[in-house]
Image (cartoon, rainbow, N blue to C red):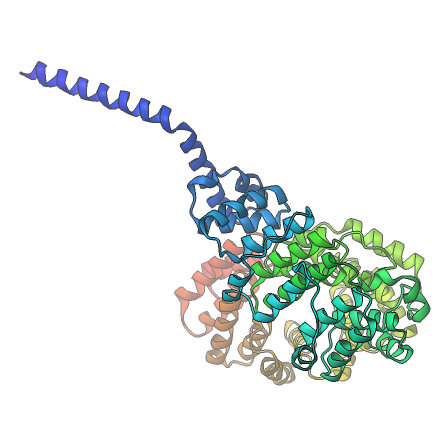
Length: 539
């Protein structure tokens, strides 16, 4: 009986493995696809952008749901994989004919490839987009030119007035276009982009007064800090990114939609529409700047950097792009090239104090404090810079880092005199006093003011908490230090301060836990040996 039982078991095991083998053969491709899907999910979870780029386009589109398709679609657009985007958009469209992003993407793809435009789904877009955006899209995608009535003129809001005017301008109906542009001016609706459009329109209409007023408003200048005039701009109209074609007009609409989503903090959608806009016209300055800002906010800094890299020096957005690139380079920790670029720019344009400030700030961030102080001093002594408080503040920081405290204190006091309500200037001066155990009462008064001005900054809260600690107001100290750590839990110094306050309050085990946390956060903490002694012996 035992032998029969054993044989049965062996038969069952054999049957199980044969069955598994057959299933494995049948499902090999599915398992591979599922493996790709899991790798993609993991890359998303840990925010591994390079891994995400490698995995998102390997997923079998036929076996995933619409929600997943939409995520893959956005990623393919963000990573400029246009062909893959088209395939995914088509798959989404099979599942949902009314999907906003898929329909608009396919519309743009048809527009670029000069196929007949499929406008059948535009009516359904009203469920997802503001009616005025739909109207603007219809202006540039309609096969028949629109006939504009007096009612159109009377009722149009600035957004639609802009597109009606641009459409008429392209069709050489300048007089009628001007009526729509005047409507915008009467409503006092302005932005840099709208002013660029109005300037181009006024140049075309030959309205000299309007041209001059708009040039003053835009305040374009070259890298020698010489203002652009009518002649400069007339000879280089491309700097205004004028709308000259229906393709440009459609790009303008997507810029408007991208701006709207950006203002609503919906950066994923802002990026999507921004990418569509730049696909239609890659030299669109305002769109490039907005898109780079969205990428920076969601920590896709390399994507942001690529969008604004290598601008022409004649581009009026050059300095804006350069400043953003500097910000991005700091986070990417790859700033040697930009440092050399700034030095070369200053050689070429020695009168441009903005470049001088950027170079001085870059020297300071790289701990080249002597070099930064030299440039800050030149700006303070020689340049017609309005907000010199910020230069005194920056130079004061550089002096303090070089342990030249008297000079640092003098600069920080001057910065505070020129800008008495800046919480960061107040904090730096007051905390520097605390660090040197001097002027503690005055520092405490200043830091109470700083926290009123900026109640959500962890470092300022820590400074106030530390001022209370040094003044023996321990409970108040703990309150602000705990708040500071809640904002910046990964900062070793803040955790160290909180540990000291806990100990002074008799909360010894909490203090030791806090000090241990300091060495977990930063094993090479500058006061590591002191912290170790505190863990073993307390204060």
